[in-house]
Image (cartoon, rainbow, N blue to C red; front, side, top):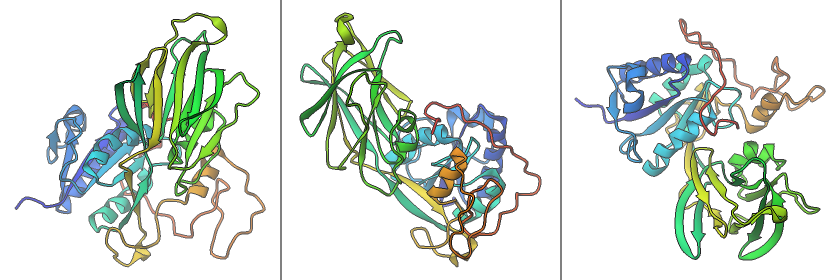
Length: 355
C-alpha cells in the first residue's frame, strides 16, 4: 500500500554532512511509513533508493505534507521556491551558522523527524513580497521574495541615481549603491547588513533600507504592510553618464537586469511562506496546527546566539537557564544527538544564505 503522507527533502549537496543527514532523514521517514521525495538534481548525491526522484519545478512539492530543507538559510530560501506554490510548510535542519529560518539542528535530528512523523508541529505564516518591474509602462518582470528584493548597481565603480517612493508619492532621490526592500523575516539578512532595524517575524511591516546612500536623509524606513514601495532607476549619479544599468535581486537567487527608467514596485505578497515550528514532548501528542512547547529556540535567543550579544546579568523569569554561549534556553532539556550521527554545523554557501 502506497503511503498517503509524503515529504520532499531538499539538501545542500555541496556539503558531505548535508548528504549524510539527508540519507538519514529519508531512512527514518520511510521507516515510519511515510514516502520521501528528492529532487532529480540531487538524487545521485543523496543516493537514497527509497526516495522518489522528481523534476525540479514549481510543482515538485505538489501533494506533499511538507518540504524539509537540510542546509543553511540559503538552502531554505531555495526550498521555499518549492513549498510556497504547493502551499505546504517548510522545515529546516540547520547545517550553517545559527539560522533564523531553520528550526532544528543535527543534534536533535531524530527528535525533529519523530515530531514530523507524529505531526507535532505548528504552522507559521511568513510574509513575502510581490515584485514587479515596468519599463516605459510595459511589465517586464514579475517575481517574489521571502527575505528581500534589492535594486543594486551593476557596475562596482559607479553609484546609482535612484528615486524611491511610498504609495505612489516620491520620498527621496539618492546617489547610492542601491536599496533593499525587506520583509520582517528578511530584516536580519541583507537589510541588516545595510543598517536596517531588526524586526520580529510576527510584526507585519515592510522595510526600505538604502545601501550606502550619499545623502543627508538616508535612513531606513518602516511602513505599513498595505503600502507599496517603489524605486525608479534614473541613471548614473553625479553626471557619470546616461547608460546606467542596475540589477534586481530577489532573495539573492533570482536576478533581473534593469535599464534606465525601470520602475520597480514592491508590495505585500499574495501568498505567504509557511514555516513549520516543532513542538516538544510536552505537547502531549497535539496534531499539526495545535499548540505546544517548541523545540526551536525563540527569536530572541537566535539573535543572541547569532551575534554573540552580551546578556550577563539578566536574571529573567523562573524556569529559564543560561546556556554556555551566554544565551537563555527556553526551559526544555537538551536533546541528545542520535547515536552514530556526528554532524558538525557548517557555513551555508547557497545563494541568499547570509541571514
